[in-house]
Amino acid sequence: DGGITQSPKYLFRKEGQNVTLSCEQNLNHDAMYWYRQDPGQGLRLIYYSQIVNDFQKGDIAEGYSVSREKKESFPLTVTSAQKNPTAFYLCASRGGLNTEAFFGQGTRLTVV
Amino acid sequence: GQSLEQPSEVTAVEGAIVQINCTYQTSGFYGLSWYQQHDGGAPTFLSYNALDGLEETGRFSSFLSRSDSYGYLLLQELQMKDSASYFCAVTGSARQLTFGSGTQLTVLP
Image 1: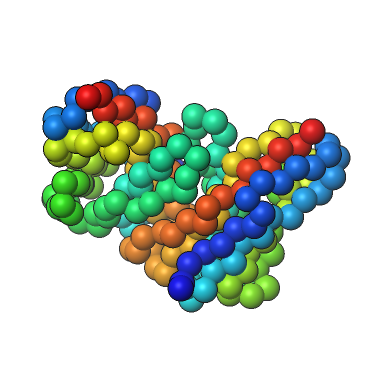
Image 2: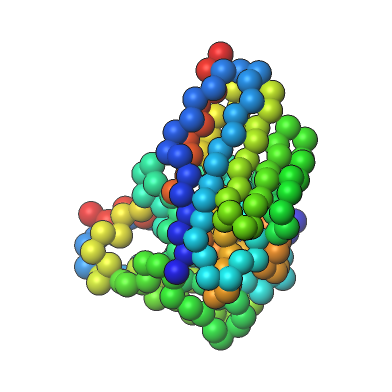
C-alpha cells in the first residue's frame, strides 16, 4: 500500500540532545514538508523540499535541520538549539502544487 | 510571506449547515485547500479550489474568490463525526504549503 510513514509515534529525549524524526513515503511524490503542531494550534511549516538535494526554510526553521538525499526520505533533526521542542510533528508529501497533501500519523516528541 | 485567518471556533447542531471562512494573504497563488483533523490524528484532505467558484464533494463544498482572497468550507447535514478541526491552506509562489490556525467545529446533538 502506498503511503507516508513517520516513526516513532512517541519519542522521549533529554534536554540538550539532538533527535532525528523519520519520514518515508512510497507515493513517488517530489514535494515533502515538515510541520510542528502545538496543543490547540495550527500547523506551522518548519522545512519543505520540492526535489531531491534541495530544501527551503519554512516559518519556524530555527533549531531544526533536514536532509533530502533520497526522494522517499525527508528526516528532520531537532537540535539542542530548539528552545521548546516538545510538540507534535507532522510530515506530508504531495505530487504537485495543485494536488492534495498526504500526512503521516505524526511523532509526539517530549523533551524532559 | 503568507498568512491565513479563520475563526477559532464554530458550534452547530446535528443536521444543520455550517460555513467556515478563510481569508488569506499570499505572494502568488496556486490554490486554496481544506483539511480535517480529528483530535490526535493526522490531517486529511477535503477539498481544493484553484479557480473562482464552488466545488462540491458530497456533504462538503468549498468556495473561492481570488479577487477577494477569500474562501469558505460549507458542511451540510452535520453529523457528530464532523466534530474536528478544519484548516484552510494556501500554496504561494515559493511553493510552500501554509496552513491557517484552524477552526474547531463542535457538533451538538
